[in-house]
Length: 391
Image 1 (cartoon, helix red, strand yellow):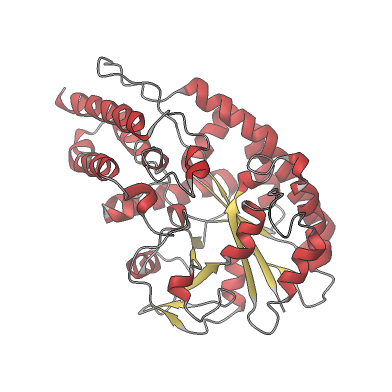
Image 2 (tube, rainbow, N blue to C red):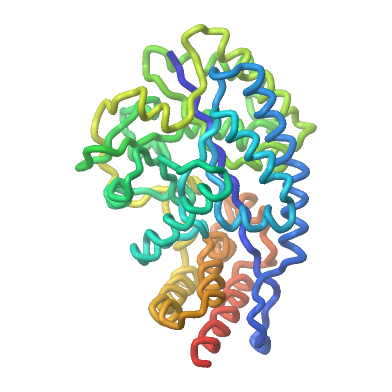
C-alpha cells in the first residue's frame, strides 16, 4: 500500500511599502501591491486549484484527500481582497476530505526567539481556522517546515497529534521518509517527513525542459509512487499551493497532471490518498528520530540560512524581538498586530544574500532590488515602532 499525503502551504505576506527614515505614519504595509498580488494569485492558483480539488473529491470520494495550512496573514488578505477564495476553501472542508493544519498565525520565526509568542500565535491561528472553517487543527507544521526535537516536545504539550518536517538526507541517513516516526523523547506525537525528491519533481522541476524526466506525466509519477510499496507506506508530497498556476503556469500542464494523477495512483487497489491526521492514526511509528539541530525545507542547505545567514537578518530579527515585552505592555492592539506582521519570515527572506543555486527562489515576489534595500526599509519601519512605544 502507498498512501499519498498531499499537503499545500497557502501563504502571502503583508509586504512593506517603501518606508523612508522621514516617514512618521504607522502604515507600513503596501495595500495596493498586496491586493494586486492576492487577486492575481487567487485567479491563477487558488480558485482554479480549489475547483480542481473539489472535482477530484466528488469524483473519487473518500479515496481522495488533501491537507492545507493557510496562514493567518493569508486569510486576512483573502477576506479583504478575494473572499470568494475563502468560500471555495469552505466548500472543500465541508466535504470531510480536506484537513486544515495549524501553524503560527503570522508565519513567523517566533519559536527561535520567544516560546510565549510562539504559543500565542499558534493558539490564534487555530482559533482563526476554527472560526473560519469550523474545524480544529490536529497536526502542526511550523513556518517553512522549521523543526527540531525541542519543537516536537513543545507542540506535543499543546495537544497536537502530528508534526511535519523536511525529509532531508542528512537527518534521515539510511532511513526512508515513507514511514511515520516518533520524535525522540516524546510519547504521543508522530513525525511525518516530506519526500523532497518527489515533491520537488512537481514543485520545481515540472516545467524544466532540461530535466531528463520532462515532460512529467501522471502515469510516470504514479509508477514512482508505486515503488514505495514494500519499502514504506507514505508518499508525503509537501509544497506551496502556488505550484499550481503560479510557480508552474497553467500552460505547463500542471492542472492536467493533477487531474489525472488520482486515476493512475488508484489503479493499484491498495493505494489511496490520506489527510495527515488520518495517516498518523493509521500507521504506527517505526522508530524514534533524533533531530537536535534546526532543519527546514528552504534552499539546498535545508537549514536556517535563508533567514539567518547574514548579519542584516540576525540584527533585524534580534531588534524586532527585543521589543516584545514593551509592545505587549503598551496595551495597544494595533501596535501589537503591526509588530506581529513584521515577524513574517518573508521580510527576512528578502534580506538573504545567497543568490547562487537558490537565487530565483529568493527573487520570486520580492519587491526589492537588493537585500540591503530590504534591510533598510524594514529597519525604518522598526524605528517607527520604537517611536510609537516612546509616545
